[in-house]
Every structure is written in C-alpha cells, then in structure tokens.
Image 1 (cartoon, rainbow, N blue to C red):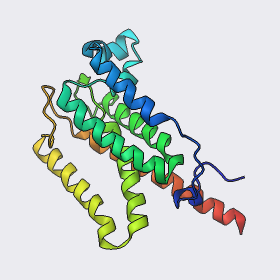
Image 2 (image 1 turned 180 degrees about the vertical axis):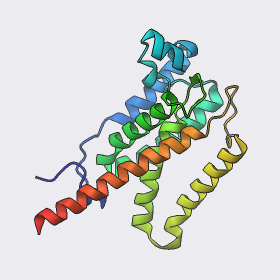
Image 3 (image 1 turned 60 degrees about the vertical axis):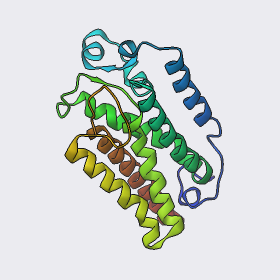
Length: 205
C-alpha cells in the first residue's frame, strides 16, 4: 500500500486524501472577521495561555486579523498557495498547515520571542508556501523554477531587516520572525518527506 507522503505523491500521482479543507478553513476565517469576533479574546496572548490555560489561542491566534487589509492579503496568499498544493500534492496540504502552526507557536512560546500578543495567518502561511515553491521548482526546472524561491527569500530578508511588511497595513507591530519560523517548518516537512521517500526506495531494493 502506498504511504501517505511518498515520492510518487510528491511527483503528482494524485490520491486526494484531503479533498475538503481549504474552503472550510477560509470560510471560517472570514466568518470570524465579519461577525466581529473579539480580537483580544481570540488572539495569541502569552499571559492568557501560560497563566490562565487559554490554549485555544494557539489556534485562533492564527485565524483572527487586526483589520481588513491584514485579512485580505493573508487570505489571498494562503488560498492561492493552498489551491496549488491541493491540485498538485494534496497529501502535503494539511501537514504543511500543521508544520506552520506548530513552528510559529514554538517561536512565540520560546524565549526567542518578546511578543505578548500576535495575530494573523502569514506566519503559518510560509510553511505551505515553501512546500509549494519547491514543488513548482521540481515541475518547471531550470532558473525559472528557482525564481519564486529567490523572490520569496528576498522579500523575507527585506522584512527581517526593515521590520516592515510588504503590502499589509496593520496597527499591530510587524513580526517577520514568524514568517521565518513558518518557512523553517516547511523546510523540516520537506526534509522529512525526502528522508521517508529515500528510506522507502531503499526498502524496495
């Protein structure tokens, strides 16, 4: 039986194990925003999580946004990247979301972060983004295949240096380190998939 994360799946032998999640996820984010879900009740709040046991904020903190600009750009990018993965490598869609969620939360909960509050989808987004970009490079090949990776790296580097977001306008202070954490989560996922695929190849010989 073919494993869930195999080389064949990565190369496009599509077995749609996760057909549902993108529309539901995006709809939930929009509903939360349009119904004026209390940002301070749902955002990542380090004190509330660690001292009051409000662990749901580790999930809802990525779903709420500070304003319409923040929501629009985050959701457009997340939907585009997730649609690409759902079409080309559906087995990696939910794992990449989970990798982004965990990696950003680990940063926010660690001594490396000085933030007390956080909201938005963009940090989590970078895990599926980097997975999608590597899949694009594999499909296209050559220098053109590497171009989106280079553009993404340049954008992230600019944000880390300037501590400013591109396009997004938000009253909340930018935190591009969350983008870097999400990217690292995506890279770790790709490394795990590659190792598992190679071990599977060795086992078949």
